[in-house]
Image (cartoon, rainbow, N blue to C red; front, side, top):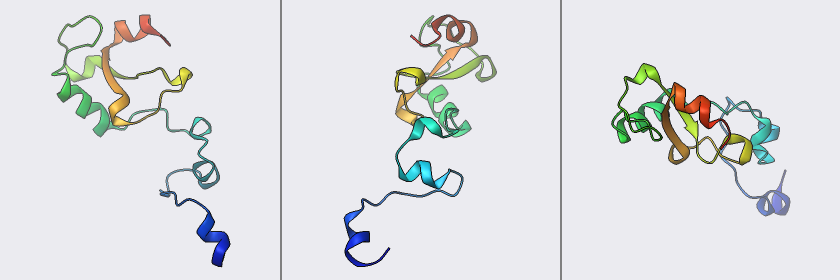
Length: 97
């Protein structure tokens, strides 16, 4: 694109590990980015001090899972501030609530 046409479009960050057409269309639900990165999981684990948000029990990092809040199926995004850590049992019971 050149001139006025490119100036009218909003700028989007582009990372080569995403499908460009979907990123530029802001259709995150079509991308394979549902899983939290290990750094996001570790950050949530440290924030919560290894404590499950639902049952309030402490667990080792290997016994916990990253969970979207709100749920992915209800528009939750895969961003660090939307990541909570739940024990496997609570995460299975919670489902998409």
